[in-house]
Image (cartoon, rainbow over all chains, first blue to last red; front, side, top):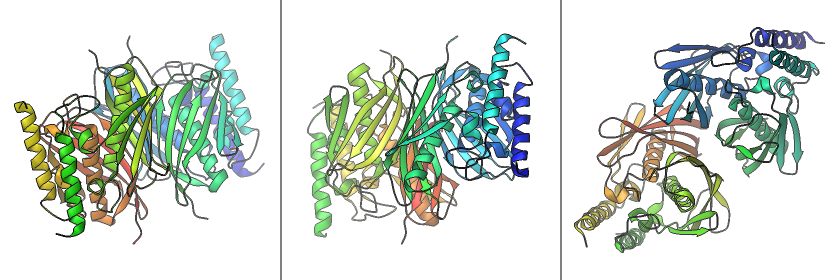
Length: 146
Length: 146
Length: 146
Length: 146
């Protein structure tokens, strides 16, 4: 096995250990969020998901897979909604893939376009470690009834 | 540790073993596609990504995470484009989340709205094991130059 | 005034006459639908908006303005929803502009991705007179309460 | 004819007169932009389309038709692109309809998410006369070759 694959294996094993390091499965910490190392933080009316883009998250072309960005941005918007007005479900999400990421910390910052009683509109901006905007998302959410 | 968490740990370890079972990192098989168990098949002008929705892929509310669906649909569309006209990059993708998935095999079938020399438009329909449409995606791609 | 502008003026006056030919302002016939000559028809679980693409509807580059296509597709989807399950409001709409239109009859056919009690998902395909797909739209709707 | 319809007729005739007041059919002023009274202005890296929402632009439910907003936002983004880096064509546009408009001046302000040599990403925010955000759009453009 090449050194390259050894690194992928090492990182993969560390990702799984992190995923299994807790039994929590709730907003803030669940299997997928721990596996990808998503740090979820809040700041007034924003929620940020930060993570390090590592090689197991890459597409066949060697950059961060768009699906991982979609997952991180979905989590940032869903957690913001849950934090501010209660859990909701994504009706739709659109993502613009503006630039590629080949490593470093990615920060996905979610904010509201509008908070509604039933329907809310959110957006999210993803930036690479050098503050370049790499993706932009908008989404529509429906609040879940208790 | 509860039996429940034991199952999540067992499945998680099996996912990592599958991801590490090969050194390939290319169209058709790469770390993420193996980790999630994505089977990629082609049929004339379609590409299908099939996988079993298991508990480690769930959101805090207990259903398949939208980001995993986004990842599977992105892969189905990207592989179809690569298969038919060469590798491309996603400019944008929009996903409608039509129904929730709580288990079973999910099939994401990608097809073209239009193949272009530079820009192509694709769509993808995700169905649950009982043939219910659970998500619909459209996306815009730009071919990469050799 | 050139013959060209004369034609635009003639068509423009005919459009206004058509818009003012009725006082109706309701589903099926309202000022904008008459001005653009939108014919709205239903067929089981579909609604089609057909119209002739004429020069006053063109963008500065000489093809049918994307906003007119957006208007026609929005009307096709909104009328289908109203016809099947009652009037609703568009939460969002995404349109792929697949080909350009330089004249002839355009047909925008709307269908459901899913009818829901509160939230419905629709799509619409626009075809030019020669049956080429020129645009594709998806949208999310919320039913209005009586 | 009711006073109400008289007003609609008066406004409709004024819209047509405005559309026919010039022979221009180019960026900045063309039939549709004059018909709807779209004022197009630039400010460094922004383009704004302003117009008064009048009754002929309304949907059957009595508020500004989403298609007119789509048209205005498309024009704001397309004119900004043309102004900054040359004319382009819309590959796709997504609009969130956040609030309804029942009159007054609407301002649609376009800005770049990223200017590219071939592909550019833009967004547009529409505000009602009282500064409430009523719609948000994102779009992808491809530059036209000379």
